[in-house]
Length: 119
Image (cartoon, rainbow, N blue to C red; front, side, top):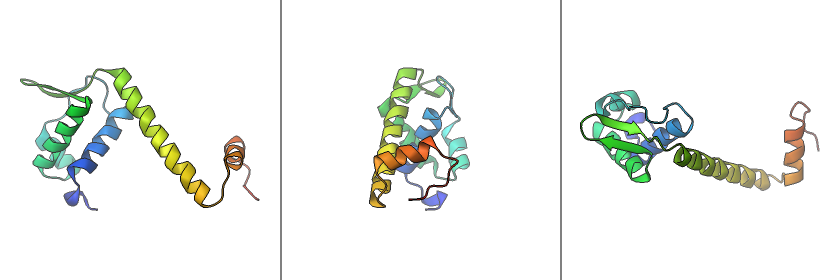
């Protein structure tokens, strides 16, 4: 998918990732929608819809006169970060299971990452 075809859902996921990874700090003011649209190479309406979604999730606060800000609720951000990590870890474990890697083998791989894994 090229950036022009990016949906608001995908864009909201990208912005959420930027927030939970610390690229945007708690209470940091976000750039205006037009600027974000240029940055992500999407329509400004796509940005507005993505930001609205994140506002409903509590990740963005809107202040009528000054713009949009990353939430100052660090507990919420941490909780979402942990939830995303668990989801990714679950997906990773499923993929490893599909190729026959058992949890004990995975533990061995992580315990000794410098040793080439041979079965």
